Length: 48
Image (cartoon, rainbow, N blue to C red; front, top):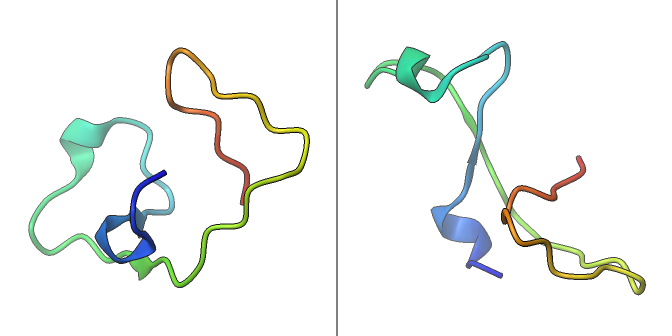
């Protein structure tokens, strides 16, 4: 799990190619891992 400080949450973005320098985002303050979480192969298993 990465540090929350390096993660960004974008809304209304369907493709990463849509993200530009001026695209607004939310910072992540905390990562909470569910007790039953199993690491995914793809690395995209995130719930907000």
